[in-house]
Length: 365
Image 1: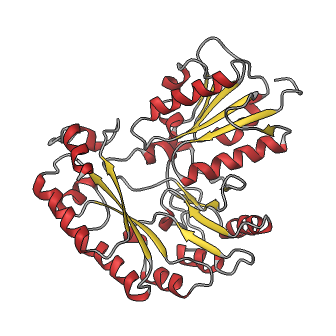
Image 2: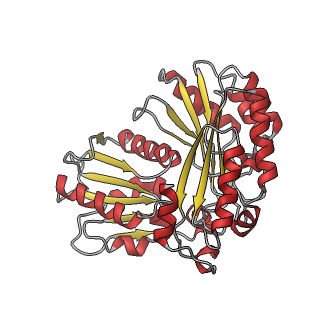
C-alpha cells in the first residue's frame, strides 16, 4: 500500500471484548498514520471484527463486506475476530474480502497491510492453530462510547457443550494487574468516567499467559486495586460466572467507592438436568445463593440473567423448571437466547432436538 493511502474504517460485531480489541487495532493504525473515518465513508482499509456467538455470523459478515464495497470498491477489506478464527477459508471466499486474520495475527495487522493489494480472487488467510494463542494482548475502547471497555482476561478453559468460544479464543489467560491499572489510568486521563471490565470469563482472572501459570493476583485483588484508580467514577463488572462470583467480591462491591451495584450472571437454564448436559460448573442452588447474597448486601442492585431456550432435550417440563426458578429469583432483567447449533460442539450431536419453530415460540412467551 502506498504511503498516501491513509484512511481506515472499522465495524464491530458482538461483545464488549470485541469493541475493546477493535479500538486497540484502530489506535495501532492511527499511530501508523491512518485517519479514522466512518464505515460508510470512502476508506482505503475496512476492518470488520466478527463474532461467532450470533446465529447469523456468515450473513452479517457478508452484509458488512458489501457495505464496505459500496463505500469504496477499491478499499481493502480485512476480517478479524472469532468467526475469522473459526472459518477463515470460508470467509476468504466472500467477494470483496482481501485478508483474513486469526486470533494470533489480528494485532499484527499493520505488518500484513504493507504489501496487500485489492484482489479479484479469494482473500489471503493468516490463521494459526488456536493452541498457539497462549499470550495476552491488553486492549481498551475509547472514543466510540461514553464509557470504556477494558479487557482484563481472554479465552476460556470451560467446555460448555454449546459454545465455540474456546475454539475461537483459546485458553484462559489474563493481563497483569500492573498493566490493567496502567490502562485504567490512561482511560481516566482521557476524562472517561466509567469503565466496564471485559473478557471471556473475567471471574477466572489470574491465569497467566501459559495455561496453568498464574499471576500473583486474583479477581478480588484486581477489583480491589481498580477501586483505587483516580479519575474513574464508575466501574462495572460485565458478565461473570456464578461459580466464580465469590462472597468477598460481592462484599467489596457493596462497600466500593467506584464499583456500581450491577451484576450480569449467566444462568442458561433453571433445570439442573440441563445444566449438567450443558456442562455448566454450578447447579441452581449455587446460583440462587449468589443472587440472594447480592440482595442481602445490596438490596437495590441490578441483576441481569442470560438464559438459553430450546437446548437439546429441553421438554415442556424442563422449560417450566427454568420458568418457575426465574419467577422466584429477585432479579432485574433477562436476556433470553434461542439455542442454535454450532459446529464442533457436543450439543450439536445431542438427541432430543427442539424444533426451531418451537424454540422461537418459547421466546414469544
